[in-house]
Image 1: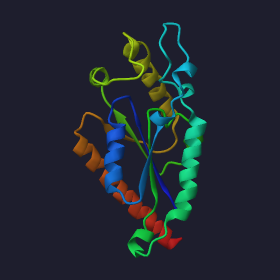
Image 2: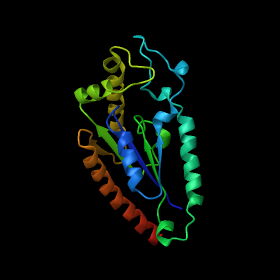
Image 3: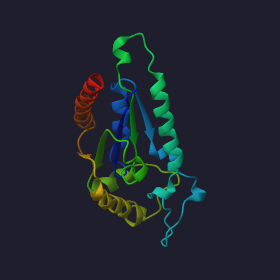
Length: 199
C-alpha cells in the first residue's frame, strides 16, 4: 500500500501544529506525528555559555524514538486499510509530520511526498512566542540569545536541500493557509492515485 507523507516545518510559533490539525480534520485516512512530543527530559538538555537551555537543537530531541514512531505508522498503514467501502479502500494513508527541525535531519530526507515551511518575521515571531507558556518558561533574553539564532542557522542549512519545499507566509490567516495547502495536497494526492492505477 502506497503512503503519502507530508512535512510541515518552520520557525517557532508559525502555525505548524494548527495547520497540521486542520488538515487532519479534512484529509481522509490521516494521522499526525508532532516533533514536540519527542523532546528529551529537561535533565538531558544541555546549557550554553549564556546559561540558556539548548531546546532548539536536534540534540534536544529523541529523533530515534520519532523515527521509530514513523516506521510503526508506515508498517501499520500497509496493513490497516481494510474496508468494504470501495472509495475508502482506495484512499492513500496520509501521515503529517510537523516540527521545527524536520528538514535538517538527514534520515528523513527521502520520506517526504510534500514539504511545507512556514515563515514569519522576527517581530511577529517574538510577539507570538511571548504569549505562549512554556515548561520550563523562557528565561529573559532566551528568544534573542537562542531561539532566533538557532532558527537562522537551520534556515541557512536548508539551502542545501535537494527536494522541493513550499514556503508559506505564516502571517496569513489560519483559513488562508489551510486552503492553500489543502488545495495543493488534493492535487498531489490525485497524481499519486493516478500513478497507483497505472502501476
